[in-house]
Amino acid sequence: MLCSRQQIVPHQESIEMTSNQKTMETSSKFLSLVLRHKPEEIGLSLDHEGWAEVDDLIRLANASGRSFDRTMIEAIVASSDKKRFALSSDGQRIRANQGHSIEVALGLPASVPPDILYHGTATRFLESIFADGLHSGARQHVHLSANPEVARQVGSRHGKPVVLLVDTKKMAAEGRVFYIADNGVWLTESVPASYLSELTERS
Ligand code: HQG
Image (cartoon, rainbow, N blue to C red):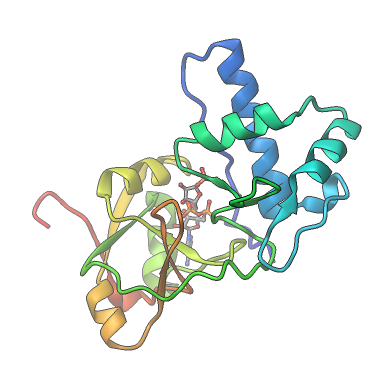
């Protein structure tokens, strides 16, 4: 369900890009769209773990007017700054590593998080977050980062960034479950406000 605050913002664009980079960026956004959110946009089928057949993806993407081939897909998978996508070991299937709004079973094992993780958001969401906690909204999970700088970049996609400290040690001790995606992003169902504090110079 899309809440009013939930605008899934696609990847940030760099300021200067060559036309090749631009094509890769556009194609990567398209892959995010069909592998995380709307496979039906091109009639693609994902299995319950989120995998699509690469041959189907290429055929359907081309039928929808985009220029895709295996070389381009492999280049996007290899060059994605956030390792957004993974190919199966035989190279026949592809899926997004995380960030889905459609329900998929990523099959990630529960993992013990570091004592603290970070969540980047925008200042305009703070009041609501400290009232209701962090919710996954349109996505399947709340996304947390081990690195405050990465969290700040994630937050800046939504406005003036602010970084929240998440007391993951306490959450884990109280039985809350965490997963780490293949690209290092930490995932959890939700974060009640009592585990959150704002990262300041002093903290
Ligand atoms: C906020 C990118 C008000 C939450 C990144 C966030 C990430 C609330 C926004 C990945 C709230 C959701 C995910 C509440 C949460 N009240 N606002 N109670 N609870 N929010 O885009 O974490 O480039 O769905 O703070 O790197 O920003 O796409 O999540 O600001 O890993 O590969 O609601 O997306 O990866 O926004 O980003 P999003 P996110 P990609």
